[in-house]
Structures are given as C-alpha cells and as structure tokens.
Length: 246
Image (cartoon, rainbow, N blue to C red; front, side, top):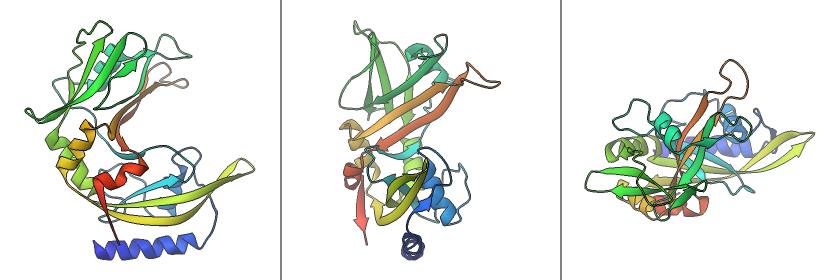
C-alpha cells in the first residue's frame, strides 16, 4: 500500500506541473478519463482499484456533485431487477412519452417522492442482512418492488474496490468550447469498516441513485438505457467513511 501511495503521488506531482491539460473526453467523465490516460491506465469496467491497490476519484473544485463510490445492481428473486423497478416506479420520458425512465436518488433517513403518486425509501434490514428499497403509493400501500442489496455483495464490492482511496481535485476552464483541467491536489484515505458504511446508509449520508434513461437515437431507440445503480457520498462526508492517511 505505501509503495502504491508513493508511486501514485509521484505521478500526480508530475501531472500537476503540466498545468492545464485539454480533456480527452467531453462531458462529466472527462476529468477522470483524462487523468487515467495521463497515468496510462487502460479503460476497463472491472470491479478492481484503478491503480494497483488504490481506487482513484477525481472531481472539479466548483462542482457540487457527490463522489460515486461504486455501482451495484440489486440482487433478489427476479431475473431483471432494474426492469422491474422501472416497470413499477418509472415515469414517462420528457420527450418520448411512451418510454419509461427512472432517475431518482434514495436515502435511508427520508422518504423520496417519485412524481406525485409514489414514494420510496432505503431501509437497512439487519436481521436479514440486506438493504431494501421500499416503495408506496400516496395512500401508503406497499408497491412490492422487492428489490434489495445483500450485505455480502455490498461488503465484497466495498473492500475490493475501496479499501484504499485517492481523491484528486482539479480546477477546470473552457477554451473555445474545450474543457481543460489542472490537477492540483491529492489526498489518500483508508476505508474504516463495513459497519460504518451501513450506518451511513441509515443516516442518509450515502445515497443510492438509479440512472435509467432511454435511447433516443439508433437501433435501440425507445429502449431503456441503464447507466447503473450508484452508491454515492458527498465530498464533505468522505471522512465519515474513510480515515485520511499521509
């Protein structure tokens, strides 16, 4: 671990000296993709850390967006759990009214309205060792979504991906409609424990975000576009889940 910290810090300091660097990809993911290109990390979707034992998270200083921890499709008794959620809780896309979408953040400490007629909340079920998504209509009737994430699955993802973390901040600016980044600060963290993770879900500090849109072009037009179910935390709450290390 300490060797990985030392090597990554050296790479970061060399990148910092370069000043503003043109983004190698447009959009929100450009900041992370560009840094990974600079450290010559191949792009992949494996659930392993980005740099040896260290997961890397990058963010724009002016952004208020939470830090995405990991993605986790619900487990359970249904073959297509995301489709089930969209069928029960989804709502019409703004442009393609015949197609359902579902873009909602859920919390463990408050109920979240889904449109005008439905609401949902995340509940930690310690007896059955899982995190449940519960949903109700506006009369309080259970909509029987039957979606959950087992403790075992969440623990595996958390420790495999996030035992050690590097958080990198960058200034950003636009020149002729092209975004540029100056990576200027790095901090290293170590994960506390799984119980803390679960407690933070209960307290609403870690939220679960469904991100299901619809394809508007091409061969799959009108079909659901599942961008994943993300567990996220605010930058200001990172030290609730991690201990900063030198």
